Amino acid sequence: MPNLHELKNARPVAPLKLVVLNSASDLGSKVNKYLIKFRKKMNNVYNNDPAFQGYSEPNYLLNFSTPRFNSGEGKAVLNETVRGKDLFIMVDVCNHSLTYKMNGYINRMSPDNHYQELKRVIAATNGKAHRINVIMPYLYEGRQHRRTGRESLDCAYAFEELTEMGVSNFITFDAHDPRIQNAAPLSGFDNFTAHYQFTRALLASVNDLVLDKDHIIVISPDEGAMERAIYFSSVLGADTGLFYKRRDYSTIVNGKNPIVAHEFLGNDIEGKDIIIVDDIISSGESMVDTARQLKAMKAKRVFICATFGLFTNGLEEFDKAFAEGVFEKLFTTNLCYRPPELLKKPYYIEADMSNFLASIIDFMNHDLSMENVSTPTEKIQNILELYNDGTVIDEK
Figure 1 (cartoon, helix red, strand yellow):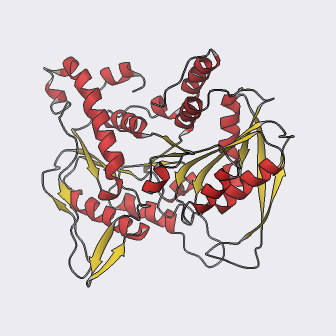
Figure 2 (cartoon, rainbow, N blue to C red):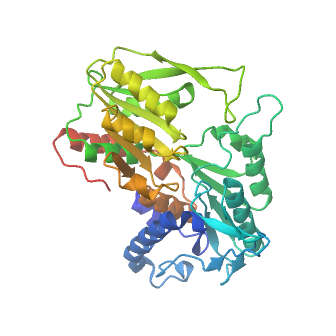
């Protein structure tokens, strides 16, 4: 937890409760454990202060359920009071492992189902809770962030709808386009990144990186990820490159214009380690193709970092590419559902975000500036200094 003196000098706005939907149960459980552990240590400061009643609890998880009728219709049921609580509702709209019954058939939950379940929980708690905050790491409909032709603006509409339902603060990570907050400019919208967690995971798993412009290049696989790559390369002291996607705009395949070719813009990469950074791995075809081209250009090693690993086409392409030496390691966060088989892969490394998310929740519960947790530059520089001095970095 960063800047502990800030927390010691501030009071919570209301007693904290985590409302963790089934889709985010693994991440929510870890966040709950971090909050219990941290606040237990801090509790001796506030033992006799009535303003901190309920500050240290054995459990912050709200007891609730979201049952469904045989017709597939659902509802949210609260099994304990939320009156006067500061609620943080966590949902993972990408968790396709969950199912429900409808007319005797088993259906997998889609992002639309998860979003509807989130709204049910908000509807059940609104008018009773002191404040409602939504934590949606993968932004629902985030890739439908702009209109091209006769299309719907799903992402902006969803954010506007949630604010109209009474959501005070909206927390997401690596939004595909954070400008969707303009749909409700008077509401709280915080967009965090995983730069520090990726840096730590990379340094913990690779012990022979030379962190300078002569040995490392940070690559953006497309124009949209360029800002992310520039920041990452700046704090690492590395060079930057870009792959430009040439698309066929005359046709649409699987809802998007197919990529015709990748064109590289940047300095010579021969003999250098490459770090590819992006927000989403969807099917993974584009990412693997980028890695293959980098190896064909005589890159030394390729490391892939993506905040959200969806792997909509499975892992076969990544297995094949790894076996061929196309890339060394694949890093994603645990902010969204990951198939169990991914966790067993020899090339996969998790960047754990649960401690960071617990920090965000704690600072927001105290109404403290998010700058305390959202600016990782100093932390990255400190860990780079330790790494360059020969210190072994652990993953957490």
